[in-house]
Length: 123
Length: 290
Image (cartoon, rainbow over all chains, first blue to last red; front, top):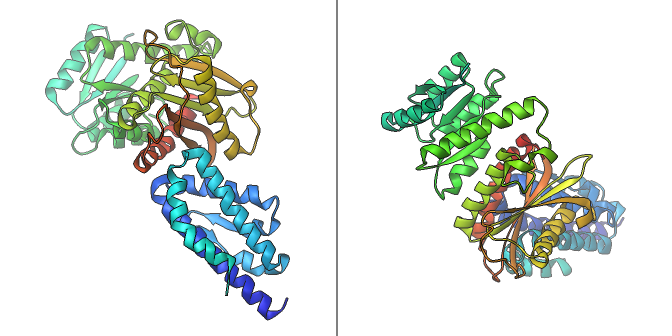
């Protein structure tokens, strides 16, 4: 993998790390750690069936860890990486919507809208 | 031999009242003036049941209950906690502390005696292996298959949650490993078939999204619990809902869904409250059996 490709992939990763970090921080006070870990883990499991790169994403009480996924960047190109995270967020929002109607998701969409646009155009 | 009951209550008047009520039904009663003394007395005296207030000096009722439930020698003693009417936090904390049953204050003497008798009856029937889903039918108006403990908790959840976040129905789905899953539709008024199916679908959608399965109505044992049979039947669909995963020991053991026929009936604070309740009540459902 070229260093430019690697740089782009890292940029994509950083943006989604921020985005998911924001989502995590926003839902944590309402849903609590145990529930957030469970829901995010379900979203990761569900999405990783189509995007195996995500099995390297660790979910714990302290949040999402991207360390292992950085070590395995060679397993997916930038488009696949971007699509993986887009689908992960879509699945996460789908789970939240099925659990809480639109109450949480409406708030989240407002918060993450700008960040999601950045993710489509990494530097 | 008469059953021994400990009353943990710091108010001498209240303690004396509870003692007299219980003694009138033939129980042997002793009083602990606070939670710390209650803990010591329970360990030494091994009562058959404890009735405990919440606010007490030295050690409160939650802490005492938690301590009792964490010790091998006292964890089997049932604890009936006296809660404040409409205070959802009392129930949340009580469930978290391991309370087996609740009684709302102020209470009539007859209610206290009825609750105590029910707890003892359930213990004897469980010990005799007679308390199965099928033969519990007579316990609640001859209509539904619920243990008194389970009915009490479902009813209290609906009562307290309903008051605080304006819902009059709840669906509680409990996963039964290796068996048929249960779904309790608990409502203030009877539900017609369409509204019952609507609520069932919402609970199952939440269960499926978390479980990754494809559960349908055929996969569950459905029990309807109606608090006021005389109320008019609800024929409307539910336009607002919140579903909460019930997580116990890191495992999703079920889903709790509350619903309202109005649109946008719930606020983010309601979600927060319900998620807290879900976490605490999961332990209670795990204890009383799924």
